[in-house]
Amino acid sequence: MTPIEKLLSENKAWSSGIKADDPEYFERLAHLQKPEFLWIGCSDSRVPADKITGTQPGEIFVHRNVANLVIHTDVNLLSVLDYAVTILKVNHVIVCGHYGCGGITAAMTNHDFKYVLNMWLRNIKDVYRLYAKELDAIADEEKRTDRLVELNVKEQVMHLAKTSIIQRAWKHERRPQLHGWVYGLKDGLIKPVFDMDAGSAIDPIYQYDDL
Image 1 (cartoon, rainbow, N blue to C red):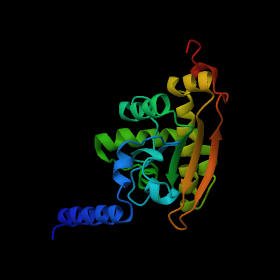
Image 2 (tube, rainbow, N blue to C red):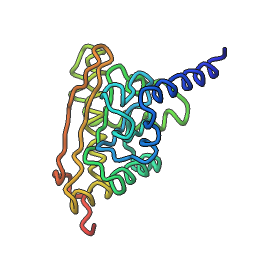
Image 3 (tube, rainbow, N blue to C red):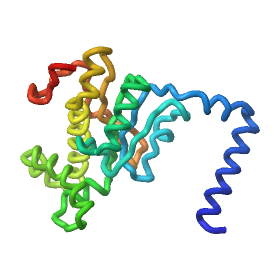
């Protein structure tokens, strides 16, 4: 059996098991999507949003990319954010990074990862530059990397607050709350590192005055 055939076989077994326990499960799920949360996480296969939060299908809307970045030219990310906030009316947006992130580690080097990855990792390097004094003072390489993971999450949450999507929802509906979390691969625990309530102050240059 090939790896692809194994995946399909496991899917059939999973579906059969669900239907045996709850015959109406998929019929209900097909007509239900009212998630409370938008999760912006890393594409790392070790950090599945539903597994580590104990959520069920329909409870959490998910977007993932390398190193959980919120980039203002990323139409994919922005379309997910707009749909989640404007249409699904989520009350919480979570940016979740994780310790041991390969994207963070790569961005801390001077290695050439070729055009596309270089372009992506540049966003993390910009975060390092903002906090270089703090980070360069950390002698232990692993601890320095872990701290950049946390600071990167903080910056991505702040990037969310700079979007008209979030600011419009804050102004008219007093939602969503923004959260920055970091997941520990070594212990399976989530560490909250940064939060922004609806209406939190941001630099005036990023504020829209005609929403």
